[in-house]
Image (cartoon, rainbow, N blue to C red; front, side, top):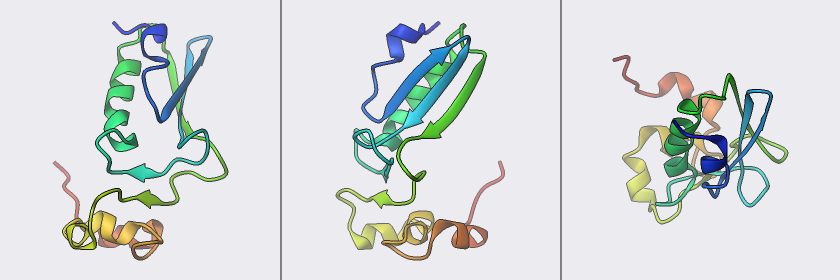
Length: 115
């Protein structure tokens, strides 16, 4: 079982705080608004491990997932991906204001699997 002190400072883009069994998990980019990113050590890669750590914490009764800064994931840092590589990713190609339409307007057209 993961204890809070063993995971609280292990992530670059995830900040944790716990009080009375309530864990706040805040994503950020250098303390400001988080950017979804594809980097090998980016937020995309960290979130799975961060959620797994909290899930095995016996002292966590409630998880609050939030962000920092003035907005929540309003843009994407595509890192080293080229426009050609992004064209093969239907979701990402239309989810960022820098790359296409805002995400909320594009959701009904995204292909997804239900099982």
